[in-house]
Length: 86
Image (tube, rainbow, N blue to C red; front, top):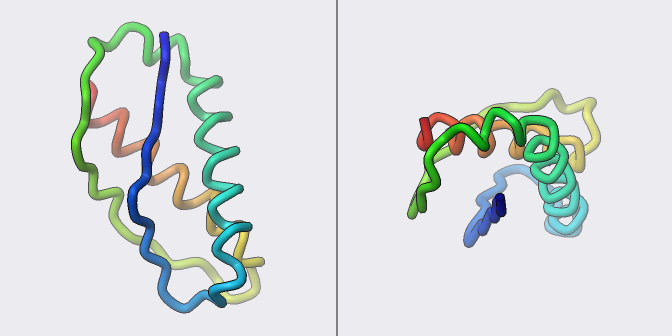
């Protein structure tokens, strides 16, 4: 089974633009980890192409490093994908 995430646009408000690559890298790593952990669950769902998913929004405490926002983004995207394919 092949799982491919393509994120065309990620809108981040309130972050230093220099943080964008660190955030994106963590999103990629966390999505890969989640796909691996939940692979057995995903294998029982019928394959589908999802053209667009709104993964919502969330806030992170100011004391968290900006890159850790990537974990929250990945979880939101993954939950939205799982819901769209069920």
